[in-house]
Image 1 (cartoon, rainbow, N blue to C red):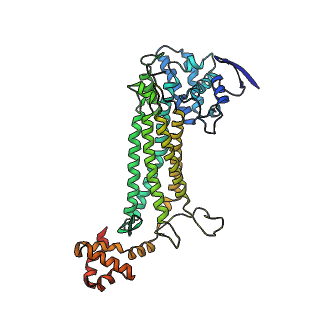
Image 2: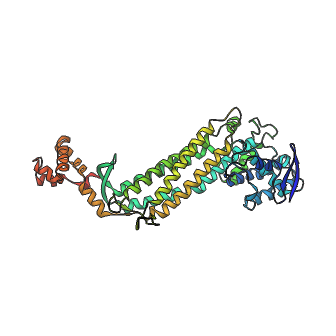
Image 3: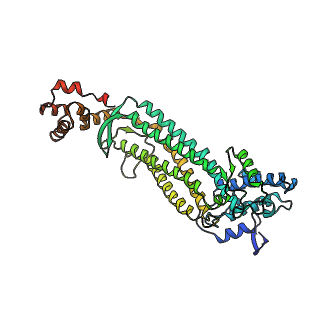
Length: 448
C-alpha cells in the first residue's frame, strides 16, 4: 500500500511502511546508481545535529517546548539504529548532500508527528550546505578515533612485543633486496613499530582540522535565516555531545566551499596505507618458503593455500591488508579530485568524499585488526635460517673497513664469492689477514 504526498513539485507516491517524505522518495526514484548508500555514520551525525539544533532553537525562543521534546525523542530513536532502513539514498545524489539531509528531516518529522514540519521545524536555522559539512566532520572524527586509532594502537603494541622478543637475534640486513650489514630482528621490527607510531601521531594531529564546524553558515556562509548565535551555540552543544573540542568555524565561506581538512586527514590515512603496505610486504618476504625462500620468520597457517598443491600455505593476511592499502590510495585520489571542485560557495562532491573517507577508515580498521590477530601476534623467528643466512653473507666484510680499508675488504668479498669460500678463508688465501688477525677483527656483535 502507498500514500500520496504533495510537495512543491507535485504529487508523489510513498509506501505506507516508509517514514520518509517526498524529497527522499524523489531522490530514491531518480538516483538508482550503484549499491553504495549514504553511510549510516553520516546519517547519525546529521541526526545529532538535528537534536542539538532543536535544543538551541528552543533556548533562543524560536521552537516551542513541545516541538523540541518531540524532535529530541525522534532523534534518539534514529540514533539508536532502530530505523536504519529508512535511509536508502545513494551517495551518488546531489553533491551537497541535500537529499540525505532532507531524508533525516523527513524521518524525524514523521516519527515526531504533532504537526512538526521537516523544513520549518527540524531544519530550522539550517541549510543542507552547512549541515552536511558539519556532519562530515563529526562522522570522520568519531570513526577515526573510535575505530582506526584504537586498532592501530593495538597493532603498535603487538610489534613492540615482537621487538622485545627478538632483541637478541642477530640477522643479516638487506638494502636494494641485496645483502647488507647485520642488525637484530628486534631492531628490524622496531622500525615497523616506529613507523606506525609516527602514523598515529600524524592522523591524530590532522583531525584537529576537523574541529571547526560549518554550522551557522546556512546557504552560502552568510548565516541567512538563522540566529547570529546559532553557530556558536551549536558548536558548544555538539562538543559536549561528541566529546571533541569543536568550535564554530571563523570563516563559514571557507567551511562550506572546501573540504581541505578532510583531505588532509585522509592523506594521513594514505600515509598509513603506504607504511602498512611496506610492512606487510616485508613480512611475507621474510616468511617466504618454506624451503626455497628467505624463511627467517614463520607466520600462522590459517587456511590451505592452494586448491591443487597439497600442504601449501600462503601469506593471506598480508595479501588482504595490501589490497586494502591499494583501495585507500585510490580513495585518496578520489578525495583529491573532489576537493578541487569547490566551485564558488559550495563543494558539490561531498557525499563521495565522506563515503570514500569512511570506507578507508573502516577497511583500515578491520584489516589492521585481522592482520594483528591472524598474523602479527603469531610471528615466530626461525633462528636456524637466520643464522645460516648471516653466516653466508659477504657483506659482513664491512666490519674490516676501518682496519684494512675499502679496497682490500672488497677484494676479500669478491674472491670469497668467486671461489665459494668463507670471508676468513678468502682473507687468509689472499694474504691480507692471518687467521688470528681475522678472528680478532671480525666481530659481528659489534656491527649492530
